[in-house]
Image 1 (cartoon, helix red, strand yellow):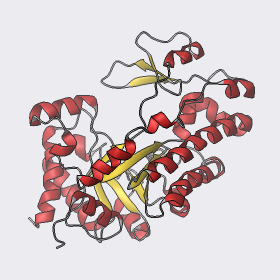
Image 2: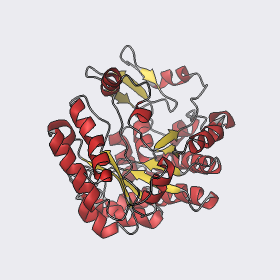
Image 3: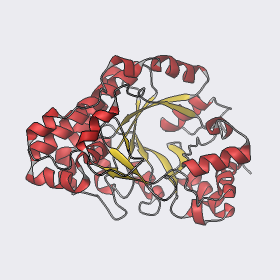
Length: 356
């Protein structure tokens, strides 16, 4: 059994395919679950309370007046908000769920795309103080992650899913403009955050469904693989040792070898409902670490605490063997997840570390 490690040492050991003193963990919370957990635990900081080994940074919020995007929308519901890309979020009627409205959905010419006010991602003020925050995270013995973001998800939120999918075939000049523009932003962000000392760059695009890829692997290779490679290269050129984390929900087995090829080192979330974590460990465990693997569609909301502990132990003994595992539910914890199951997730990790 390894000697006791700091949280940062534990993360680096696991992601370097060395078995840590215990498996690191992660959890994300929807607003209702966060509220419930704070009430039950009395904790202000749930990351501290549950002893999660990392902390993340992201860009500072834009100071731009987002009302400039209102003219790209008509008939929005009361209470709709705009983000820095001009994407509207209309209120939903169930917890935190909202409806996304694309500002570019009616564009018919490349001139409209070119005239659109893109966000000020590359402005220096967006990075003020972040290097100090990263240094502070490390000084606390924690692992520092930096969120760089999406390409596919951003462009389809701006254009609309159906229209962007059609653009890749019928209007490639529209698709190329958007993909290239957003990729340049992500390249810049990856470079800046790595220079600031982040231990890990986090990227992601949901390109999978439960049954397979959301688009053909051929389309993914044409539009997204080379651009993902550019973003990763921007980080690795600054620091070859920075870790590269990539998120996609669903079954993306068709492109896992190519994700590894372009530099992805950590894959999230590995939904056990549609991909077999132990099988992927056997296939790719020498080149890939796995972050997630605990079912948020099944075990966490609908299992018993014993079911949760059983799944955690199975993952540690299979996927975690020899390192390469950060345990986490495969998405944010939804209101259906019982408090007892959340505690069971944490308890099982500690019990395994003690050999109970």
